[in-house]
Image 1 (cartoon, rainbow, N blue to C red):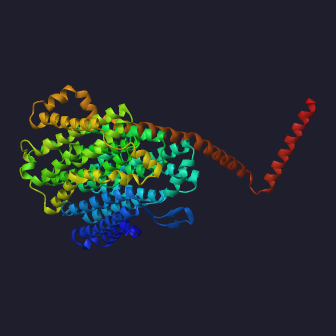
Image 2 (cartoon, rainbow, N blue to C red):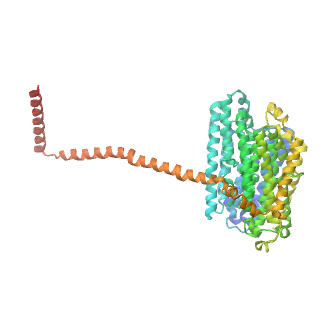
Image 3 (cartoon, one colour):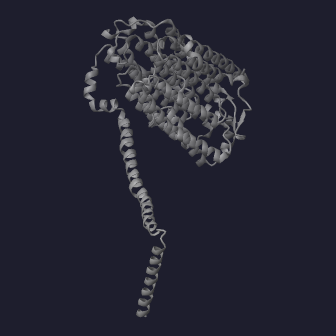
Length: 615
């Protein structure tokens, strides 16, 4: 089946076209068509993944574009692609099924299923692309679909604004990605990934460092890494199913995947930058998640933080650990978002201060959220623990300052997700939740399946996952990283202790109040304000856009209008005026011409006489 892998993105494309053309006449706006074709894509993905275990790696011959071998587009299936195909197709399928309940009755449901089908197709094409141009085209389609879906309820000013913000911020990264692609083409004359990996060892380290940092710039935008992380929390304006798909399987995972895919092109210098950007992002986002009161925004900052963990792992050489966390994160993050969607569907609010005691009224959703929260917090034996432990072990052997940052971010992960669970699902019922009830079966069944993933996906670590993923890399590189992968007794103990400490601290603040959350906020008010205002980065960017860019543009416009245009227009006006004066001389009357001739001759005689007299 691996040779027919091109069918994987094709099925969702067919779904997109059918729903776009005929969705209005279909039940649920074509929702069942989306379920069927995304399901077929998942089936082909699973069969392809089965073949990867026996074949190992397959690359198609491809089709030449513009008659150039450098632009020969085919597909590449290897262990890394297999992991991503499973994540996108399986989690994407469950989210589309869940959407049948969540989006029921929405007037834009046809547009929703068309766009989400194209979204999944674009991400699947990105995964199997064997050429950087093919990857970039898919990359841009992913960005377009995210823009459309974040702004799905475009009549809301906040949704339209969030969509534009996501589109513009990620374009900064896309420009860097395109520049990196151009550098590689100028150096190697090819953009085929396999050929680039073969030629990379012969290139000057400075060239590879520049190219890989530019590629990473694209990942920083797409995967919401510091300082381009500001778009993702605001992207919560779209439907919660869109948030789940963006965070768990598509948009933000594309950046991490790009770094993992292009890993043989990265140098130690560029990986150093990758590691520090990942560490800073993991910590900054975790601190902001602790103070937010919007249910989806807390989970969004959690995503930014854990994307930082994945990036950090790749930067320090924990290749398998980073990909492993990507896999586990897809389950517990989709589970958390879809559970949040069920809560919002029942309570009609996203403010956690309006919630409380929901576990009694929504036991399935509450249990699913508890499993997702436990996994994210990093307590054993659930999935998040195993990959988080591997990441901390990889960082421990790389840099002490980065290890301290990662450990503190891990502690905060347990704090913010436990805070969310205690406030929303335990305690006294608020007025807003008294009429809440469990979500329909079409929504709860995907939650149950994702719960199993969040519980048990971590155990693939003991089924040779590390060795399987490392087979993606060239042999020498894989052997090098295999020697550095693996757990560490001290790190594992510390990891468990940090998660337990975070839950205990949160429990005595929100579940059995020994500490007062209000008193903590008052005591650390300046810090709380800093975090609520998100380190003022949005203010800085807004100031830069409105003051620096706009004011500079105003000055340049004034120079252009009054100096450059004034000079050019002045010369034109002077010429026209001179022409106007000269035109009046041309009367067509012979006597006038004779008079002008006589006047000219007289002037010449006078000048000659005066000149001769002077001599």
